[in-house]
Length: 178
Image (cartoon, rainbow, N blue to C red; front, side):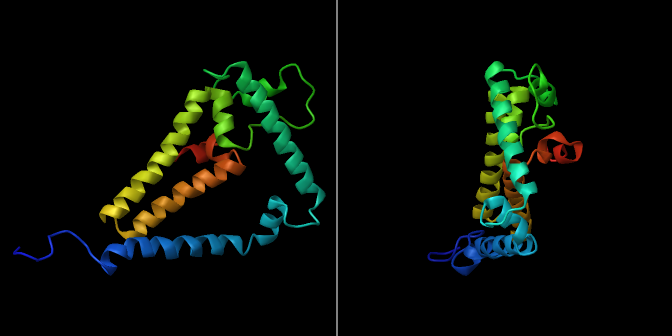
């Protein structure tokens, strides 16, 4: 175009901000839609509820024990780990078990125990890198705002769930996203 004409393909003003507005509005709505019905459970998990049921206390004690046992396994073989799916057996080797052995409820820790610290770092870089890629695409205006919001939401969900439970890593259904 001529002088002063907007260049083709470039957005300005409101149109440039639309993808971010969609994300900014969609993410809180999604969080609220999930948080409201699960508020009592979230309060108990986060320690906000002063009257946590005994099951929650057992769950917390179990998770702390599993994390400690997983750290011991990582210390035993930090480079290669024990092998995919073998963390529960490695935890049970030669020790009394106050709880049923299972993977740690923190995906990067489980990955470090089973596949080594380098694999856990690679996993974290994969998730963060995928999030960064979606954000860069939104900045360039490439995907539809809804698609970008969905992709980013799924990646954030995987990261958050992986911080509280092992399902995204240990069960075949959870591994399909890899």
